[in-house]
Amino acid sequence: MFLNKKEITILTITTLILAFAISLIETTKIFLYALLSVLIVILTNIVAKKITSFYLDSNIEIKLWEIKRFGFRPWTYFKKPFPAGAVLPVISKILLLPVQGFVWMASLIFEIKPKISRAAKRHHLYSFSEITEYQIALIAATGIFANLIFAVIGYLVGFSEFSKLNIYYAFFNMLPISDLDGNKIFFGSLVLWSFLASIVLIGLFCVAFVI
Image 1: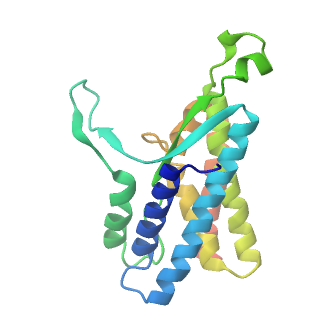
Image 2: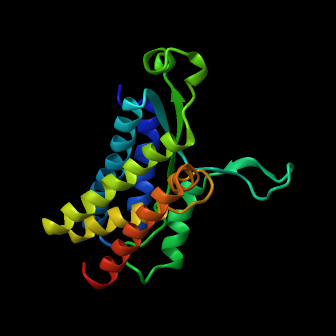
Image 3: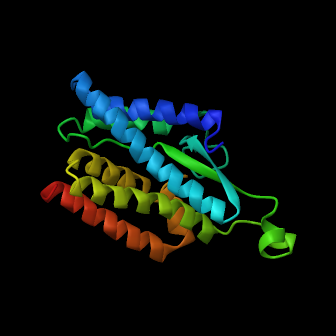
């Protein structure tokens, strides 16, 4: 199965939360539009990463972004992980209420595991079976690329709000913090992160002055 039951549950919950945050104090019609748009935006990102991981002989599992520690000292851990991916979208909407659609959208992360056949298939030596940081960066980057491409497509076919959501999703996920995609790309390839970050910033400029 492309998505397991746990991933489908997380995807459903995340989509509902983001759609609610985006359409807060709006009409039911806006909520339904936001719900469908967010679902497509997230699925676009996930599918791109799943396909890339498949060709790199690995599997990824989508999870809700949680923060487990609040400092650098060994004992600075939360007793229970803070579900940042579920809480920050609503908080950001309250703080950024005048800015329509602009809410914290980095809610999901992924964990990666190499397939058992990876070593034998690619290198014939099991000592080379681990996934490198650069390969993890490539997987994360394809999700961002996919959202940027769909942002352009959305704009060209007249769905400006859908285009904006793709750009917002790419922007928040490009932040090099915690376990977000941006952090994986930043430490896997600074050049790739800089390139993508530049495109995302151009996208934000277009949202502000063009779209």
